[in-house]
Each structure stands twice: as structure tokens, then as C-alpha cells.
Figure 1 (cartoon, rainbow, N blue to C red):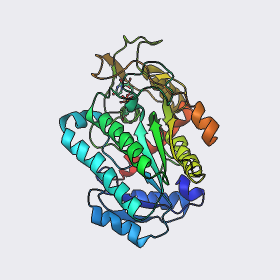
Figure 2: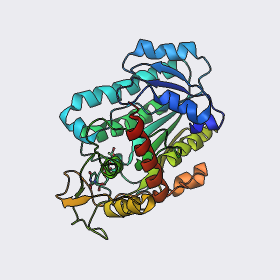
Figure 3: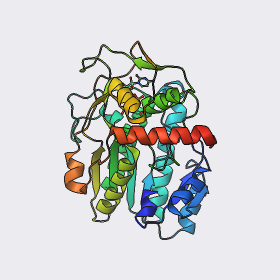
Figure 4: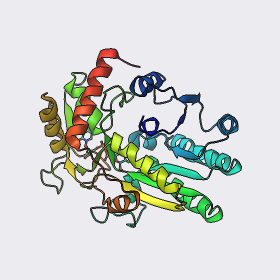
Amino acid sequence: VELIKQGYEPIVVDNLSNSKIEMLEQIFKITGKRVKFYQIDLLEKNELEKVFLENENIEDVIHFAGSKAVGESCVKPLMYYENNIMSTINLLNIMIKHKVKNIIFSSSATVYGTPKRVPIFEEDPIGGTTNPYGTTKLIIEGILQDVYKVHPEMNIAILRYFNPIGANETGLIGEAPNGIPNNLMPYITQVAVGQRECLSVFGNDYDTPDGTGVRDYIHVVDLALGHIASIKKLHENSGLVVYNLGTGKGTSVLDLVFAFEKANNVKVNYKIVDRRQGDIATCYADCSKAKKELSWTAKRDIVDACRDSWKWQQYYTKNNTK
Ligand code: UFG
């Protein structure tokens, strides 16, 4: 949506394993534009190449495709390594063959493992990931570094996302996780709408102001705009660049619950339970590098995100857009 709004002509490639074809219609409702769409799995390299054969003028690739559930990755490690890593290798080979030079990769704050300090800076050590999902992000970052060494003509932006929440402000596009949500915001919205009884807050004995985990929640529209700022950077022949995309602010689980209740005037039942294995106390970004080099900062706050997530959840529940 943000690309279209700024005059780009995106082509969407998705295998629809964790997304809905109806979203193309939602994009049309918001923007009045139809996007070209290919239902292709990136593991099918011949299929993927067709996209590049049929669209000779592709300038940039934003590589979001990948499996992203931490818990599932521990149960199905090989599926995660195959899906995330092989798909990236296929994509890079095809890009190189077709001389498409610019790629943005969705990485994650998870590559920092247990951070040695907060806020986290891009030059802080990476590694020590605690699950296969996180390790795939780390490995792909390494692959991109190695490919850049032999293809210095490429421009590569590695974007380390912190915790994306929120939805398009129209409430027409948002997150609809399969099954029980792993992440905090979709869990909160499902409790608020009455689909689930009670949020479990995983631990209140962390070394944080209220004892619950602290994260850097970034509105998904700000995150999208961070990608557009990165495309502009790639077009200046940036080479390989790495940016944290966050807000620089830490918010606790209970801060987010209370902000949601206040912003939307709804009740969110919660109970404190044991810590979730693998969670860290505090994680938030230093975002000064993106501000300086991309002229980008997150403009929306958690109140905006709570309002937009709630709008989406209500729309989705009512229309059950599958
Ligand atoms: N939480 C709860 N109850 C829930 C869900 C989450 O209390 O039902 C808490 C967690 O303990 C944590 C905070 O809410 O303190 C945020 O949890 P999320 O699962 O929403 O997000 P994480 O920070 O654990 O995970 C995110 C991404 C992962 C990524 C990770 C590290 O979802 O993809 O950051 O970068 F690996």
C-alpha cells in the first residue's frame, strides 16, 4: 500500500502459506490500484524465474518471504532451514542472472541473541540465536555478506525489525495468525474481541520497571516506510547496509495492555503466568543510524498501533476475511 501510494509499481510473489488472496482486493479498496500477483513458492526456482523473465524492468526486490514462528521452528527445524535459506539462495541466483542489483532483506532483532546492552546498535555483536527461526535470519545475513564480496555491484539492505504491531489505518489490512497467536498484539486483540478468554502475561519477575518483558513495538506502516527509505538509499549505490527498524522506546507487556484498553475503551483480561522459555527481559533499538542515513524515524506510537490493530480485528471478526 505504501509503495503504491508513492508511485511504485509493486509485483507481489507469495505462496499464500500464511496469507490470504483476498488481501489483493483489500489493497485495491485502499489504493484504487490492482497489483500484479504471482502465487509462487520461492523453492520452485523455475517458477520464480518466470517473474523475472516476464518483468524485465524489475529494479528492486524486497524479500519478506519466510516462515516466522519461533516455537514451530524448534519443532520443524529442517522445514525452517529449507524454506528460509533455500528460498533466499534461489532468489539471489535468479537476481544475479537477471542483473537485478537491489535487495532489501527482512531480518530481525533476534539476530542479536541475548543483547549485551540496550539500546542495541547495529554494530553490536550478532549470534547466539536461541531457535532455528532466528538462526535462519543470522545465516541469511551471512549469505548476503558473502555474496556482496563477490558481487560488489549489488546494493543490499539488511533491515533488523524489532516488534511490528498495528495495521493499515483503514483497518482493511492486518494480521490474522493461523491458530493461537504467538505474538502479544494479536493475542490482545483476540481477547478484546471475545475470541479468547484471557491473555497470559509471561512472567512479572524480570528486571524491568513493572517486571514484565520490555520490547520495541513499531507500527507496521512505519516499518513499511522504512523499506521505502531503504529503496531510496539503494538507488544511491549504497553497497551493503544494515539498519535497525524500531522506535528506540521500550514498552512493557502491561504498558501495552493498558495502552490498548485506554485507546479503545475495551477490557483485556489478563493473568500473570510463568516466564516463556527463551524470552529475554528487555530489547529495544537504537535507531539513530536509520535516522541519519535514511532520514527515517517511526512517527506513529503505541496508541496509534493499538487503535489500528483494534480496527482491523473488529473488521476481520465481522467479515471473517479468510
Ligand atoms: N507475551 C506475553 N503473552 C503472550 C505473548 C507474548 O506475555 O501471549 C510477552 C512476551 O513474553 C514478550 C512480549 O510479550 O515479553 C513480546 O512477545 P512477542 O512474542 O510478541 O514478541 P517477541 O519479542 O518474543 O518476538 C519477536 C518476534 C520474533 C523475533 C523476536 C526477537 O515475534 O519473530 O521478536 O527479535 F524472533
